[in-house]
Amino acid sequence: MKVIKAMSYADLSKKAAIVMAAQIIRNPKSVLGFATGSTPLGAYAELARMFADGAVDFSGIVSFNLDEYYGLAAAHPQSYHYYMRQNLFSHVNINPDNIRIPNGVAVDPEQECAEYEQSIQDAGGIDFQLLGIGRNGHIGFNEPGEIFTDKTHLTYLASDTLSANSRFFGPGEKMPTQAISMGIGTIMRAKSILLIASGADKADALSKMINGPVTPQMPASALQYHRDAIVMYCD
Ligand code: PGA
Image: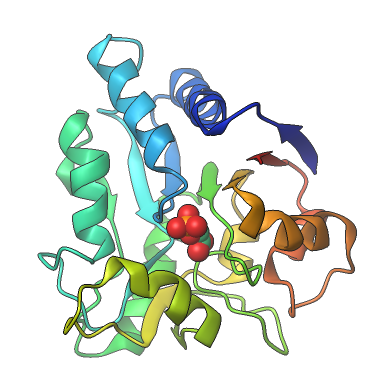
């Protein structure tokens, strides 16, 4: 893994956006894997700005998101469908037909997971995957556990994740306890990976993922075995 320290959140966001823009410029038909959460917001704003400046063209891009809450429809303001629309897709010229995010209200979640995994394969695999990291070391919603999951699956959120993400849900708003997430295998099959992290509350997970043993108790540690992974962080 290549580890890069940015000077600030603004610097991290700019550098991450530049790496993603370079991927799009190098291959305008890239299959991109997107992440949600607070950390990528600055990078998405930078990408939107680069698009407005004419520096980057999303028209040939195919996108897959890492995960979606199970139980939230696309129109729900806390869904990742909504997040992506608000923070990136409505600001760039990506073709709506090329956007894939797991369906959080699929009647048959097992079938949804299998079809999602298949559609990644059918697209030729993910060229570039953006990741955040949870305080507990999760990537996507691959929570610490006994095994590294392989494929897209329905999973329960860890209690740490429930408390970390509860900040997005208003009083009286019920937070889902399950999600559909790409597996660690799905993520590891991406050709290039960029993991971004910001703030002191991620320092412990970062140091364990980079320097600790590769273990499903620290899901992000799997990236130590990836051939082209960058970890970019700021304090
Ligand atoms: P955050 O989430 O960017 O909101 O901290 C990251 C994650 O949980 O993967």
